[in-house]
Length: 388
Ligand SMILES: Cc1ncc(COP(=O)(O)O)c(C=O)c1O
Image (cartoon, rainbow, N blue to C red):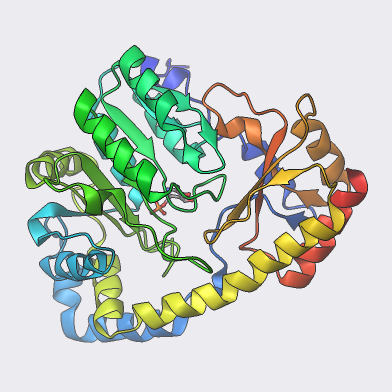
C-alpha cells in the first residue's frame, strides 16, 4: 500500500461518522445531524428555473466559467448582504462551492504548517477537519452563555500569536448561541490590535425565529480588511446546489481566487445560475420566511419537551434561531455513556466532546431540531428523559 501524505495521515474522517452509521437503524429518532429539512427545499421552483435555463442559456451554464463566480450572482449577493448592513462591491465577492470551501481557501491562503487558529471551544466539526488537514492547530477559546469570552481571546491571541480567528457568531454550531454586539466590537478591536484576521462563518443568521438581528462583524469592519465573511445558500435554498460566498477586501479576494483556481476552477455555473435566478425572481426572501415558520415550531417543540422531560439540573441553550440546542449535564457526567443507552432506545444526538479542539466538554451534547416533526421531537426527548 502506498503511504498517505504526511498531511493526510493523521486526519481521520469526521469523528462522528460512527454515530451516523447508527442512524440507519429502523425507528431511530435522530437529533444528531445538522441537515436542513428537505421539506423546505423549493424543488418545484428549482425544476422550473433549471428547465428555463436549459432552454435559454444552456450554452452558457454548461460551459466553463470564471473563477470569481458569475457577475450576476455576485451582484445579487451584494444586494443580499446589503440587507445585513454589509457594503460590498462585486469585486469583494468570491462565489464558493459551499462556504466550507471558504474555510479551506482561507486556511490555504493565510496559514502555514504548525500555525494556530483560534476558534470557539466548541466549534463546527467540518472546520476542525479543514484546519487539521492543513496541519493548522485549532485552539478553543472559552465560551459562556454569550459565546466567545473576549478576555480569554485576548490572552490566547497574545500567547499563540494566531493570525486567524474562526468564529460562528450567530446561532453557533454546535451551541446555538449568539455573540452580543459589544463582544463583536471587542473581537474586531482585538483582531486589529494583534494583527489577526476574523473568519466570520454565518450560515444560520437568516433562520431567526425570535429576538432582534445583531449586526455581522463584517458590517462593523469599517476598512473591510479584517473580516472575511462566509455566507451560504445551503440552509435557505439547498445544500446540494453547493453555493456559498466569501466577502472580503478586494486584495484578499484576488488571492483567494488564485487558491480556488487550483481547487475547482469555479463553482458550478448551473448551480450559480439557479440560485441567482431564484433571488432575482424575488423568491428568496419569502422562502426564508417560510423556512422560519417551519423551523420555529420544531425549536419550540424541542424547548418545551426539554422543559417537560429532561432533568431540572440540565443546563441548555434557548437559541433565537439556527438548528441546534446545546445541553450541559453536571460536571463529571459522560454524554458518551448517555449516548450508548439512548441509541439502544432509538434516539441519537452528538456527544459534545467531538466539537472541542481538545476533546473536553465530556458532559455536553448537541441536539438538532431541524429534521424531526414536533411530534417526533416530543417522543425522542421523552425517551431521553426516561434514560436520564
Ligand atoms: C457553521 C457551519 N459552517 C458551514 C457549514 C457548511 O456550509 P456549506 O454547505 O455552505 O458548505 C455548516 C453546515 O453544517 C455549518 O454548520
